[in-house]
Length: 211
Image (cartoon, rainbow, N blue to C red; front, side, top):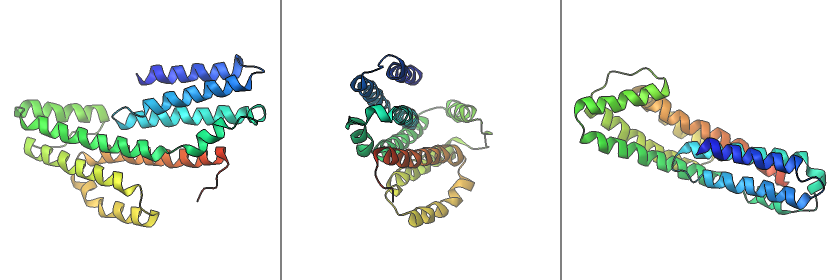
């Protein structure tokens, strides 16, 4: 459903830019609708939903900025940008990724060795990472370790930057020994970077100061 939702949002942006000439209130309604669509996409139980939401919200901000002079008398978009909390969606997505890791590990415990190795092979095929030499028991243990780290990641979002960097350094050993770490933890870090950037962008659009 991600691509169709992105296309619906694009239709709303096109409508705001080309079909609402002389009707600032309708422009705002289109942009608010697109923003709500992105927020609903973020409820998808996986981090990819967060990325699609950020992309949609970024375009909402860009569209509002382009028409700022005509929308100045309507405070609804400013309120939207000031109320935005992208970290809530990020934390929810990370925690769900941990649940997925645990469910995968649980499922592998009841599989034959051949089927379990197919799960590992499919994972690495999807991530374009070379399949390591690992047995079923070790793969299950590695996934559970990643699930624990993913949940820790969700908690680090509230840490000061220095403490966060210290925590990252402490996990370096896992990154070099756990074959799932590079892909699963890197996906979280990409989302964190995008969320930080969007938080700043939203604050600037809403006129808030960014500490």
